Image 1 (cartoon, rainbow, N blue to C red):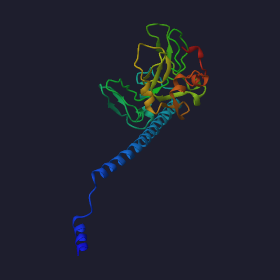
Image 2 (spheres, rainbow, N blue to C red):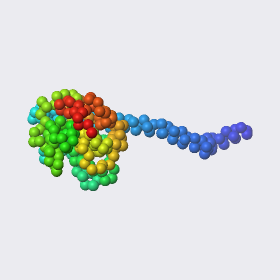
Image 3 (tube, rainbow, N blue to C red):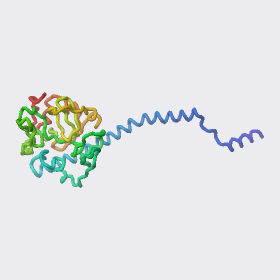
Image 4 (spheres, rainbow, N blue to C red):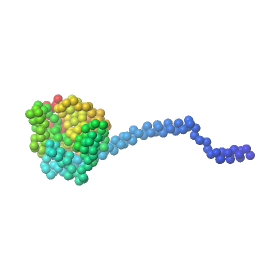
Length: 268
């Protein structure tokens, strides 16, 4: 009879609840699993963003190719509409814009890298996240020279206005090796001071025009210290900061220049 009564009592009150210790153990296990999964989820998100960025650049590269087919030359940055606006007609979509903090109007859609992060007060460029290799490997402003970038820029001996459009765009025939000539990429400039700054340009060893904040960390965070670029033949690649901005090998230098020469005399 006593056994029968005990069984009934167990059925009436149900199974025993978790103790506090057991509950804390379960919470600890969940926390450990979350800590293990979050880095993997972050890497997956970064990989997805990098893939989307490469897709954006591939579309921009195709639009540049179509522009060159029509005009026999590359877009000039010095024109009033800017290089980015000159590509709109080839993207088969309405131009999209957004208002950034500070009231800046910037292009979105394929012009916006999903990995770009801005801080309060950052200057955001109208052309979006990507830079155009309009100047190539910049020479000194004291040495006027034939421009080697895609934007039709030349160099004036006038100290007041050192950078002036030449009035002649870079022709398709000027680019000796399209498969090894940088066209567009995640927008950063490397100044001769060693600073890397966010920009709508893509260039290295530029003449330092005043002190700039070092944004190398920003560049390193874009795609895990790799920047996506599209070459003049339309293929997309991811290059590290060192081969893109700091290496002084002929291979690294010549990819900036239309004549496919390293122009080592321009090194600082």
